[in-house]
Length: 168
Image 1 (cartoon, rainbow, N blue to C red):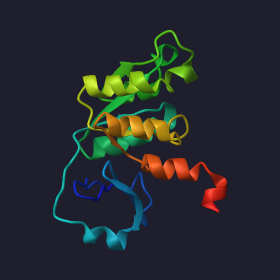
Image 2 (cartoon, rainbow, N blue to C red; image 1 turned 135 degrees about the vertical axis):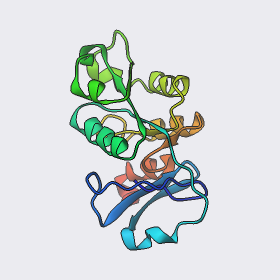
Image 3 (spheres, helix red, strand yellow; image 1 turned 180 degrees about the vertical axis):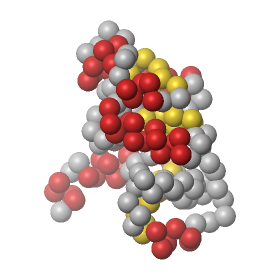
Image 4 (cartoon, rainbow, N blue to C red; image 1 turned 180 degrees about the horizontal axis):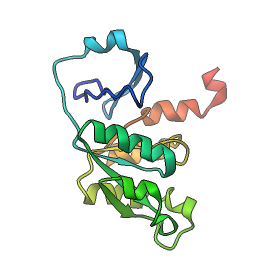
């Protein structure tokens, strides 16, 4: 993953992201998909994340954890009570219970608890994975409001993408 803006993250993992694209986003700039030939146009200001939470479960989370491990970054998982023995929890460097007493899907949608867990455990960035929170502009906004980098589109872009008439 490569994150570019005033403060950008230089990550690259060919095993995780297609070579023709790199995912670029910070809290202060909109989402940008760039072809790899443009990656060298980054400014000289860089910031590397040390700790990234994946707000998802299953294979998607495991793939992100693998990329983080290859980059020597600390991976953080969240899990529901029902997923306490799931592979994604065991593959992460750190794992924290969210949504205690909630059904499994509801636990992964507990935005306030996820943000609170991230802040409490010094997480710097949150990757939403696929599904669950990856299309929720309120989650992206909550991350930004809490000072966390949301690895994905800005809340504004996500809200506009939800409006099919506007997108056309």
